[in-house]
Image 1 (cartoon, one colour):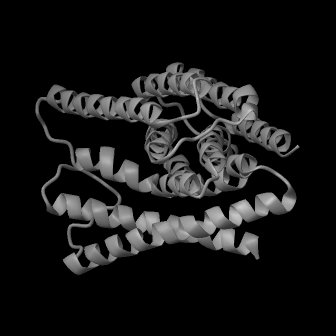
Image 2 (cartoon, rainbow, N blue to C red; image 1 turned 135 degrees about the vertical axis):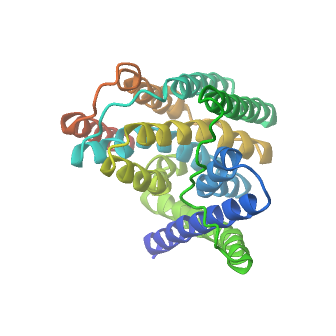
Length: 314
């Protein structure tokens, strides 16, 4: 039954996060907020809302290891599994428009690891991480504006998949309401059932966060990457993973550690943080040298992730 409750909680989280993003995007655009700012803030926060709610709920429930395991496990899964599976099935062409964001991601990863060794994560760690995320978002907004000015002032079309200019106000309100109700409900179910599963099988909440919860909350990124692979948009796929990883480390742990302290499991310090860093560094030749991610690369990434899972569960 606990696995059923965990699955139900995950489904509610994913659906609630999706409708919240749709409602928030259309409300923001109706209020005259530019689509660029919406994509950098509302969409980024909304699509990571499941992970954020899970982390806050885990801290409040006294199982902060689940929060940290979720973030570290999600970042490893995003690279090896979320890029590996689509590359294995479809192949990803070369892309090179993500170099600046990739460097920010590596810098954020190194900062996160340094703070983890100075742990546990407390409010001052959270302020540093959240502050760095704000600086990155401001830099991204400025870079996008400079790109538009370089295009002779010609405005680029603001295309957001979630935007619907004909959406009525009642539907926007309904989406917002369902999202705000569904997210805490799904987080409650998933966290409680995950803790029960961990205790039943005699493993730690951190291991459950690194595996079951991490894979589950990475499903939205998998869906986005699969669509990008089908359309041969490697930059979209890489950008999706890079942006998600940055927000996981800087935003989710940054905010969750303001709610309460998050101790760092010694095993995460010894092993999982370095796997996460290695997975991030593996992307360097694909970002800077525009190497294509063929099926062989996808098979290698996927195999590495399976090996990592087996080592964690062992």
